[in-house]
Image (cartoon, rainbow, N blue to C red; front, side, top):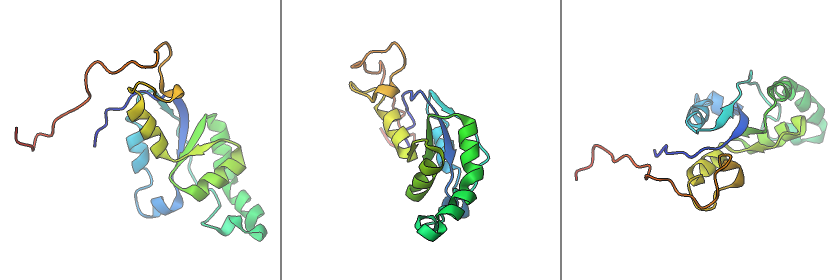
Length: 149
């Protein structure tokens, strides 16, 4: 995988969805995100957001689901982040309702990290003082050693 990432100056935390934790891959996205320069990752005591698929979307379950997610919401607020990252769309809904913090899929950060060296990168992906339109001086490419010349 090409890990030639440009900077993404953003303060985030990562929520591993319960279904990814159950599959044993909950922190895999976090390991990749740690390679993005400029990304400040604030660790939290992660726990279930309470949505449980569509359980928390049902009117009769909403209050219980929000109480279940309260420990996570408190951790997110304590971390004082600009964004929360989670690979689950229903967790996104629950976290945003419980904290008011915008929640993104981690792939958005990777997209912006790859685009940081392009002529018109996302505005938050530009390091302070750099102007738009500047390209990397050298291509970020490491040829695979198993290929023949």
